[in-house]
Image (cartoon, rainbow, N blue to C red; front, side, top):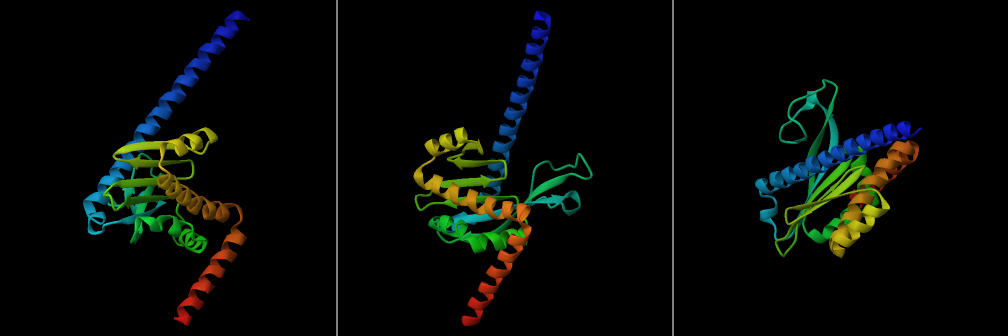
Length: 215
């Protein structure tokens, strides 16, 4: 039995070591990806033309048959013909950084955006009046915030939630929370309650059309 226990402990050590390596590689790749996205937005110059603003992009899955190097996040060469890439598309530039919680807190806007783009994430690059730039990357299994070129990554766990709240300023945490809710709420509804999602899409589209008619 002692020998069996030694073997089990050794196997457990190997599995744990492999998991830690994979997790470390994931974190390194995620940091590189977010930094690359930041550099791309900064190079376009959209932020420089505003004193304060927020560039909002949606992240969607696309096949290699729709490859566009300007919008793709991830490897440039396909390893699998059926593999998917993550495509980032700019959808709006908010006029003020303070518009972020208002935009992502608008349930109608978030549901219509999900209906149009069928996205799995948001990338938001914010410029404050102080000149500080902060980015938010929110995906189904994890989220990240870059502040002063330092990237913080968290998963959806109580421990990470507490660490995130300790690490970020109240404003940064407010913005992140709004983006997380705005992204995950409609996405989960579409997946788990498609009939309810479709009904809400129709309702919000109807309200939008009525608003346009009144104007």
